[in-house]
Image (cartoon, rainbow, N blue to C red; front, side, top):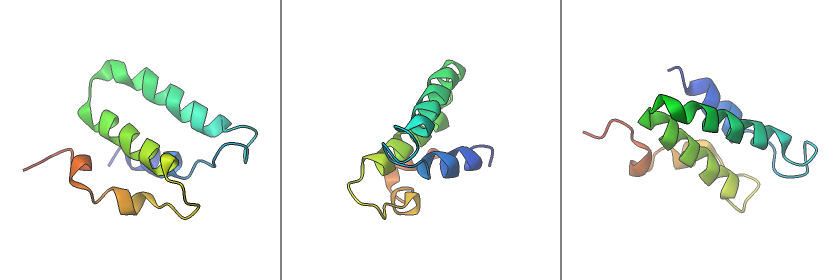
Length: 77
């Protein structure tokens, strides 16, 4: 629940150039770097998911299409 805003904000950051050179994405990357010291796996998984959305070569990439993949299941049963 606590990471929900991070997921939405990160996934919705505009691509390079649309906000002055990707400043929002750089801020998100910096935020994730700062959080790594906490050692929570869900932060690593969330960062991977967001970077996957950013790396998609389509303008209509949606984080909801990525989150259903098994590798993004933090609590694998």
